Length: 289
Ligand SMILES: C[S@@+](CC[C@H](N)C(=O)[O-])C[C@H]1O[C@@H](n2cnc3c(N)ncnc32)[C@H](O)[C@@H]1O
Image 1 (cartoon, rainbow, N blue to C red):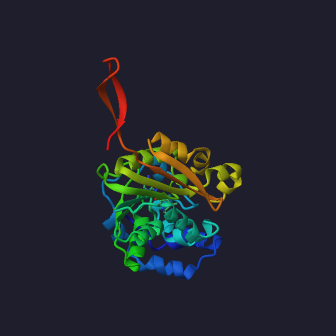
Image 2 (tube, rainbow, N blue to C red):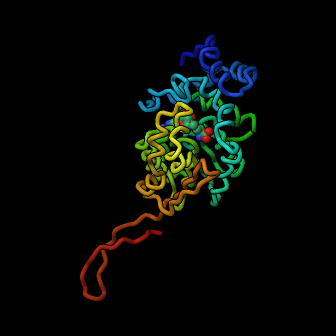
Image 3 (tube, rainbow, N blue to C red):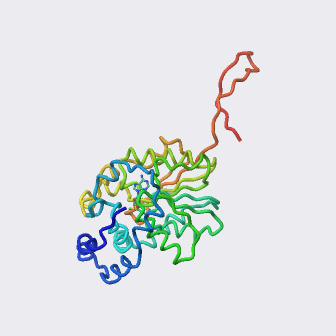
């Protein structure tokens, strides 16, 4: 993957730094401390095909979106201002909503791994995997996990089609992913999550409060977010129901955010039985233990 190390900082990061209150020297030091080409090559899945909705759009005013090193370098410094009343409080809201003790956790669209690291800290015995389409975001995530001495696996992949076997996780999470994917992709990601979960496993989605976003369209214009209005017009609750999750409910978090939880239920199987009363045969749905 070719990296234009000479001009990248000036071309993309300098405007970002000017717009937000970010320590330019710190950002530059971090950018220069990493060999982006070798790290991203190591983490990249060579056969991965990027969905068009992802590779064709700019996100947060950065050309090429997350397939640009600048997006990865500037993501954490910007995000600390983008999650009122505070990034730590909002991410903690997701962790507090998880009532189970998962053993295998998959964090979809993990980005720079901020939530993934917290998951590993909360569930130190669990195997935790973070998956993202951007190798550069994964480079930052890996760097952060090493600094924190946390054993997390990083996977370059598409959350719509992860390649993991059926029923291989008991918790699937996605934080701040769905406002960045078209609703059709979000629904595909939920269907994939259902496939990946064991029976009784849960999905937990943290993102912007859709009700609030519908009432404050101006908010959706602040950052360059190509799909946020489509996200605001949809319902994660309904998408989860359509993906066959049960016990689905959405709770508001600090008014601006929402957490939606769902559980993969026992599978139902149609069985034939003989009616005791009249000897007729019929079909009924039975839960399988
Ligand atoms: C706003 S960031 C959120 C990152 C992180 N989850 C967090 O809470 O900070 C969205 C991330 O989703 C990733 N992404 C978007 N579409 C994806 C997809 N279909 N599969 C995997 N990752 C995807 C982007 O590359 C980006 O890193």
